[in-house]
Image: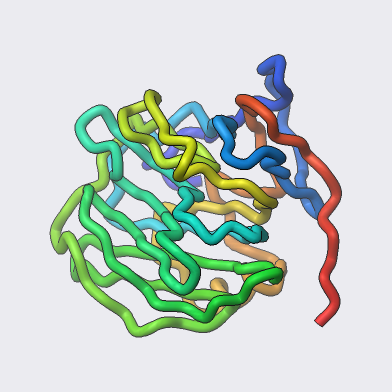
Length: 225
């Protein structure tokens, strides 16, 4: 495992007990709307990031804004954020600045997305359901801060702090991964197809988690094409 990372742990169950689990074929179900629930991922990368890729898969009927993946530091609440602003638009943040990506309105279907970024060029990549969107740029030369507070299902307004339930996620979330490098196109397609992936510090198949609020772990319902 790359020396820039320490192991990422997520604590499981409403009681906060810690364990490692293979969540293959399972989902987090955020059951209420709006919701104050979220899932914490920790402990944290102790070194800054020059590159990263985050992938996840979600299923919801929400039409209002919601946060999916939030990585906040003490100096920047939107250090890394994946946010669905409305049907047909994702916003991806690095260092408090964001890019918008227009996407099809695929209601009542799973959406698999990957967001990758590299500091040297400022290039940001966005993929949805195994397809790349035109690359864009932001925060060239920026360094993503370390000692972050990472969670699923909310947009953090402060480091480990307040949230707005209006921007909460309700629905199903699965296949969450994060790498400290820019994933190749071939491997991003592998993530979409749920195939073998490079080793990472945060992976769905060796995950530990802490649930806060009304979130259940259930088997995934496979939708027919």
